[in-house]
Length: 230
DNA sequence: CGTTCGATGCACT
DNA sequence: GTGCATCGAACGT
Image (tube, rainbow, N blue to C red):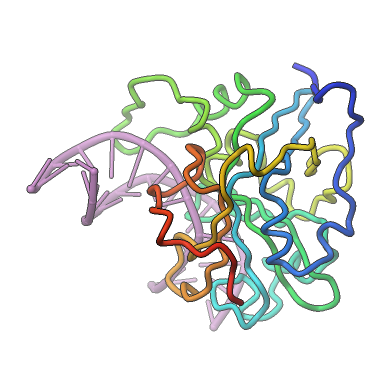
């Protein structure tokens, strides 16, 4: 399947200036944008509905907390590049690097509402290694489950460690604006980041409240803030 | 519904 | 050797 765009709009990766901004602004603004991966002429894409900010060496949950290491080097590099790493030995997680000029920070992409290449996503998800019991799920994976969660979305999109440090202004892996109105998806909400044991005081997880593709349990609307408090 | 727990690889101390 | 920015099957309500 070839890359398909909304009526006639040219392929236009977001410029580096989009990423070279305060990370909380980038985390908010990636919601509603489209993540695209083109592999061997086949595109997969989805609207970002969940993201988390990791900001600087003073953020204990950020990979830059120990200072510069071989692994976290992309965080110290130019904004608009991918930071992909392996976690729990089996999941590749994809971030977009933000904040130039010495502040190591990034936004973790946590969930997408799939758009293009859904059958290819389903094929890739079916190739997931089986657990110790060797049992596979009974039914088909639903569309909204394909890219629900950071490990699931990289599996469905075919994003691997080979994409680490890739330039997001290129033509292989990028974000673009297809004019989707965030209001059509739902209301933007902020809350604590998921799956971490430190840095939970920061409400730096941004998501579309109530969207089916958002990971974790649904959160009652009164439990979330509408703006982050850095 | 809810919680628990094992699989899995690599960076880091 | 330790500890993960996870996932989902297998239990227990």
